[in-house]
Length: 171
Image (cartoon, rainbow, N blue to C red; front, side, top):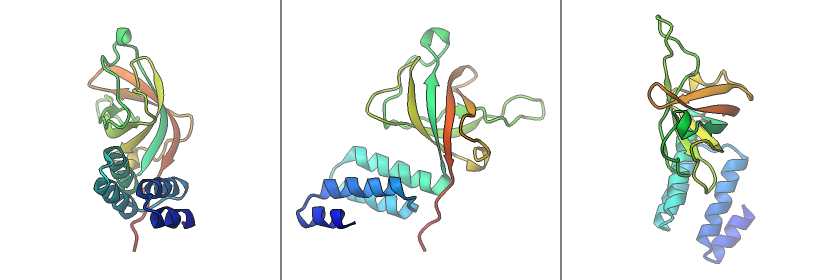
């Protein structure tokens, strides 16, 4: 925190924001923390940081799943377009829940591609998932694989790295 205060003393607002984001990575922070950082980024016209902090506020509210996602190749029925980093996609996931007839009951989870490069069809990247219902995901452990769909065809598979439960709001 001393470094943050030093940067603020010298009007290095963007560096202070980056250090606070790093703090949020090192220690789970409540949604309010991330919302305040998003507002600070908005005031500095840092749109990428606004999107990131809003995403992290959502993760803190609903939980998150870290994974390595590999997309199917176009010629194998995969996506035609790449997924840009920071672009929130909401694909369907087969988490093992079945209808009474035995068909998969897909769950929705937002998808955030980490890094600066787009995830190309046939490629793999680290991703963050924000499940609409974390309860459906909390049973997964590192090494489990979850199929990704956009409609019926399989378009990718996510290798689970970690499931992170929601963070309690600040009192």
